[in-house]
Image 1: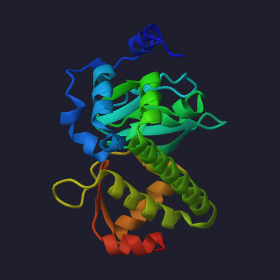
Image 2 (image 1 turned 90 degrees about the horizontal axis):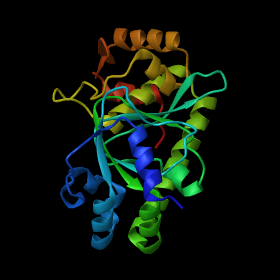
Image 3 (image 1 turned 180 degrees about the vertical axis):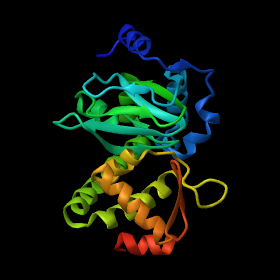
Length: 250
């Protein structure tokens, strides 16, 4: 069992800046998260136990190989989950946004974290202790069903990614990655610029190719008029052509 001292020590060892807490009932991210399905009394219990912090861009929220003491709910900001390969190279396995939760697989399996969470930009994150979350999960059918839905969705996405890595050319995977980033984080007020700044290495990582290949193909996409590049900014100019380039199936 996880006790209060363990949680306190865990929180103290992480460098997130404490925030004035907004109640779960008034949190805008709640309505896009698993907790939108939770019963009122359980939301109140979570609200009383959670700890909210601000993590700066580039800051680690939890580390691969560490013990899980709870789950994290994203109030705002963007986060990447990465896994270290045998050669030590970073592999991005998931992009996280407002309303998403992190750390639930380690929590439910009782194993250590298999990924590291790093803020892509300043992010406000709430930590919910393990014992409380598991207790709520056991007695709240709506929350339990939503948790199963999330796990099923993640499994389906993992199966698709494995299939695409094995069968799709790199050009198609890059187009699909740009569309995936668009779906995850949306665009800025101009309606075209992806609402996240990713390095060429990070994009290559998502595609599953060498950085040099990603740079070359991005230049090809620019030459073909599909995108526009400005530093780390990427504007999607021809969505229909990108969809066609990704060779997406219904």
